[in-house]
Image (cartoon, rainbow, N blue to C red; front, top):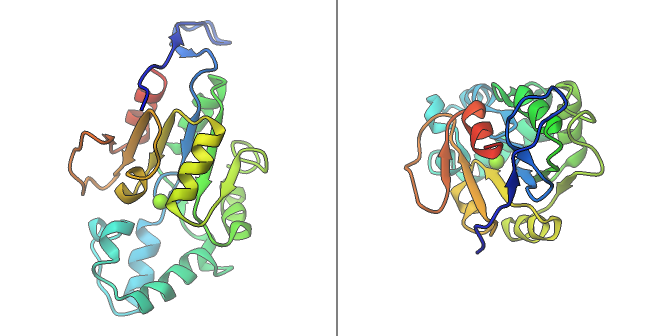
Length: 207
Ligand SMILES: [Mg+2]
């Protein structure tokens, strides 16, 4: 795995001296749990199924140990596919501002999501003004398995990839991996850079 990233300090359009990409860096982002914050909706939908979840029990790698598979499938359908409840989750705090800065830095960015229903995913991004402003048909990819995330990321030349699932980061082999853990439930690990907020992630990405 290469860790050689060439970055030149160049001036952006506002003339600031922030180091921005010379074109070598390319950012990849997972959607759910990184761009979109499902914490409240997961708690609400879980409650309808009889489960009282704390916020820190909502991340994908935690909730699956609490809610049995068949009921979790019901929750996921309501969260991702339902034309009403599927559009109620909000944007992760700071994500929109960060995407604006990344776009201004002219670093290529990509969305690589495992949503089974891209139409609803796109609609949710559209509701929040993220589609087509930051993500569009040209830079958003929907795949099925984590290994397909890896194939897509490598094919695109992604150098920095951010996901909220450790299982996915173990499979996606890029130079720089970031675990987005906004609820602070996971441990530090040498396999990834652990970040809890978008401003923190952005400072790593654009340094
Ligand atoms: Mg995710």
